[in-house]
Amino acid sequence: MKYSEVERKLKTEGCRFVKNGKRHPIWHSPITNQYFELSYHTSQEVKSGTLKSISKASEVKL
Image (cartoon, rainbow, N blue to C red; front, side, top):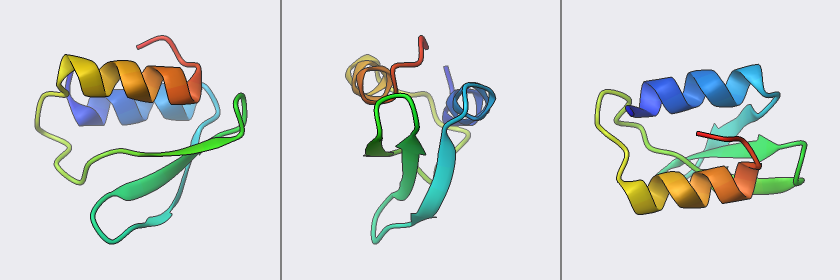
């Protein structure tokens, strides 16, 4: 799964982009009320460990 697909799924579940961090864009999940980072490289594949941590922080099944 690519980062662009992850962003699309997060948006449909209500997560939103908050701001550009120093190294990564910061997103917010209203479900868990947590902030988490994605990547600027939207065409790259997401590693499985990173995908798990994003899914855990956002409570969105990816």
